[in-house]
Length: 110
Image (cartoon, rainbow, N blue to C red; front, side, top):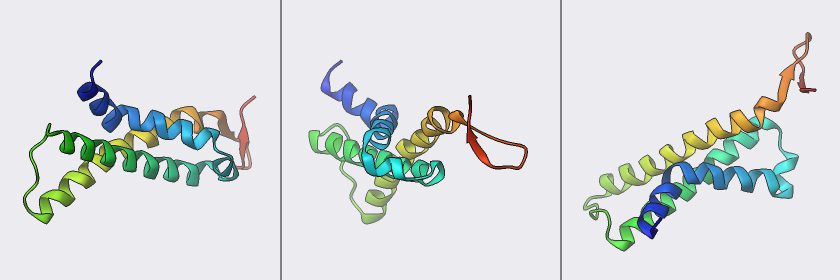
């Protein structure tokens, strides 16, 4: 894997893996309930995706946007691609450990 492939992976699927590990192993994230934790993970992942796109742009692997609307569309697109993947990963890995009892209260699966 070369640097171009690594940045492409980080900008898409890798951002959610990195965000998942950040959100699961930092002490402040353990204070959050699962729903806000999912939102924070998506935000972290979106930021990582946007930074990876900017790094690819700096390396010259993408054409430089010319107008502010193109900049906004590209950055938001990179963040959304990474952020939605983080939500799916969080739902699979974290929310899958919970279930609801007959009263509708969230409890850990046994």
